[in-house]
Length: 283
Image: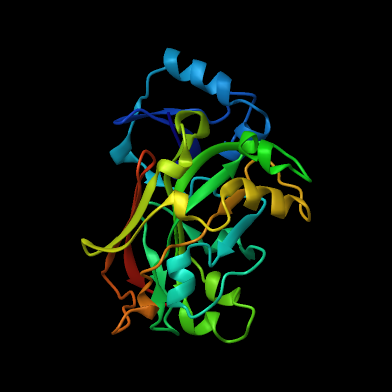
């Protein structure tokens, strides 16, 4: 079952996609008006029942995608979480996860453009898996951490490399407007038997640039959830972005940076394909 957020006739909505048509769930389950609200009100099971009785009526071609969770309370991102990416950057594996944050305004969505900022020519791709939290919790034990997840999605955590390197704190390079693409939909965690069996890749204009297995994460997902929860309570609808593998553009020889008109795809097996065109900022 594919949950998504979208624009339809100028209004923000959310629903379930069956492969062709969307069942609009906005306001219909526990009066939830966003997917985040549905998750926080524990309405997923009711939504599944509703969808079986109410086939989709909105054609996928009639909508514009929004980030899966357009309004997350927090987006927690992990850096340097694959060995080949650590090696290509000349860094060493840390004893603890490298954590930084994105703001909601930095996000964009499937089939919408990723914005190349006019002040930089160093925009880079990063394929990552996004985890959507379904439960609130603090001091979560790793053994129980997967129970707090409601779903998985694709994320292209594009980075403005020169701004990332302005200081040792690289948050600015990670938060330019419309550079973090999130989508196209969320697959329920109950439908993924083992996330470690999934594969992830980036294609740039049809050429594979990154490819890895989720089993290659240095800090696995239960460890990440537990680590963050010791400081910050997770809340339903929060997003965890789990890190990118090797093959990023700025470490290639010669370097590869995204330019106006490029097409970037992030694909995760059993989850979906996230596609974006790069568009130069004009104003």
